[in-house]
Image: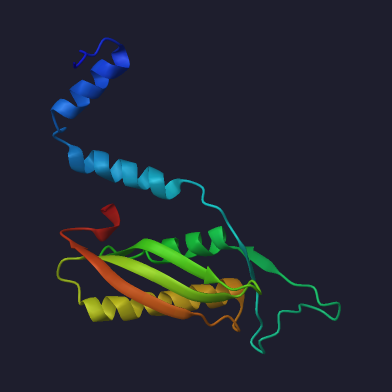
Length: 156
């Protein structure tokens, strides 16, 4: 036996399920932005000098950068062009706190030369990682184009 909705929450759910909003794209984009802005857990990543040393002085002191900072730096650097943006950024950190892999899923605008965009993104990742984590940090960088959209890719 089905019960009719009696409370305001139940009525709101029924009303929301009854029709799709006309501006679904803007609602969808707003939800995606909020999800991406959610604070994620962070791990420390050790800074590595060009000689592969993690020691910053004679006492063996180390410098660490939060993975959240690295991910944000990568996302910002990959948003400078209207024809590509990162949809997903995954970092692999080993047991010694070294960054070993960066995986990027790109969204590109229709008409973008995809191999060139992936190469450009790979170069951006390499540069940002070196700036933030030292010249000795050389992770494997995997870039995949996972979506192509009409218009500014940064608005997806």
